[in-house]
Image 1 (cartoon, helix red, strand yellow):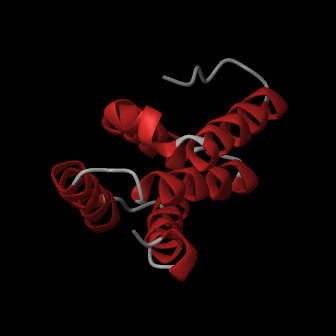
Image 2 (cartoon, helix red, strand yellow):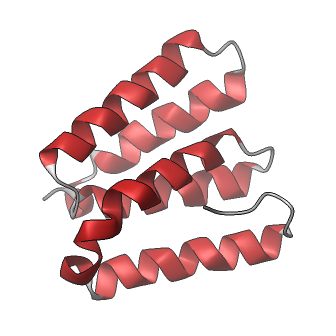
Image 3 (cartoon, helix red, strand yellow):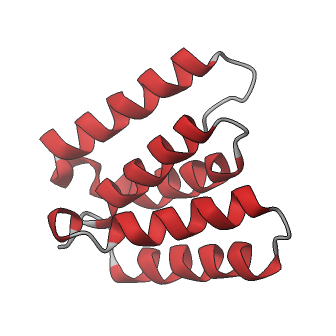
Length: 108
């Protein structure tokens, strides 16, 4: 899980590293996709807009390696966050995640 006590630069570089790993060796990380996605979903509520976009992009990259059951749980959690949250930033992050996962380059 990504620790919230570290700097913005560290979290951004970590997300870039995770995205690069998923891009370069998706089959090797498939067994860890569920845990990584659950950690990344928590980052969608970050205060920094740039980090929220990076979290959404990383989730979008994981979309192509995830199993159907993991995707179902992810979408349920995202829908719950979108419908139950009163914070506009969380709703925007969830909407961005849906947008990123439906881009043609992220589809399975």
